[in-house]
Length: 398
Ligand SMILES: *Cc1c(COP(=O)(O)O)cnc(C)c1O
Image (cartoon, rainbow, N blue to C red; front, side):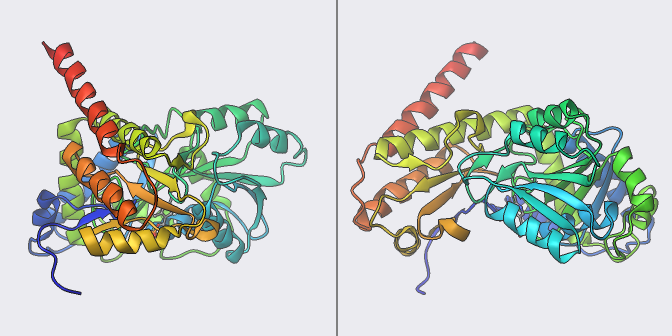
């Protein structure tokens, strides 16, 4: 491919654009991971991640692994062969987690979904009420389903489990929501939260996380699935002193320390508001183009990405290819049964109004190049909304 001048627009919903501050932080000599300087780094990032998960009772474990490793860790540490787990078919990532559960020797049951809604609190409550023998040991939900742009309502799901009076562990994948969308591990009674480095946390891929409640930790004492690399006991014991049982991804931890500082400087609530604003602007653009957002329930719109339905007769991947070649802008592909039918705009991580404007310009021009008859009103609708938000914030500050 010929060289493209200027910055690439990496607007897939993860990995996200890594800010220069994080890149510079990673570019620093690797230190002794058994030495005193490392202990301070380890303790600092574990404490910072607790604040991001919003936990005081929970333990945080950091793996040198992609998010999939943390999925496996959540299940392998708490469950035994043949255990039933209730999972919710929200989309492609939920389906992958289910496949992983089956390969570990668990018995996942999938509550069916249409890939346009989040996990259904009523369906979960009904299923758990019917489980008189308490065979279901865990309920697993993807908070922000990255294949569809639908965010499940975790607090309501917790209330549904409680309403059924069921003791199952509650596990939530926040790989594409943590540090982008409001999330509260303790308050929402989550037992294991799964997260990854390369989305809202603004890092390159390669780190993933478990946040573990006291109840999950207790379950891990009697759980029989085999685990070694992912075992919590040694990770947590070493973590008390800021260390790891094996060589950690030291340079990514430098990056994590910097990313946590950036999140704290901006303030998590401001980070969430920024993501919500960009998501609303993106949806206004989509509608003004005359296209449809995949998510159907406004309570479940994702703040970190927008999945856009391609009009009949057009292949989303062909349009994505044209946009990449013309504007050096990467958009997310349709995954699983959505292949060719949707494209996804990632608006999460280190991202601002003008980056969104540039992204939407690329989509608007690119769709026209691809021969999709869109109204050239999307960018304008988004810009008007962003300007309105700025105006009301200025007035509030005055
Ligand atoms: C990206 C993503 C994953 C997969 O994580 P990897 O880092 O690719 O292993 C899982 N779940 C969700 C919701 C994701 O967005």
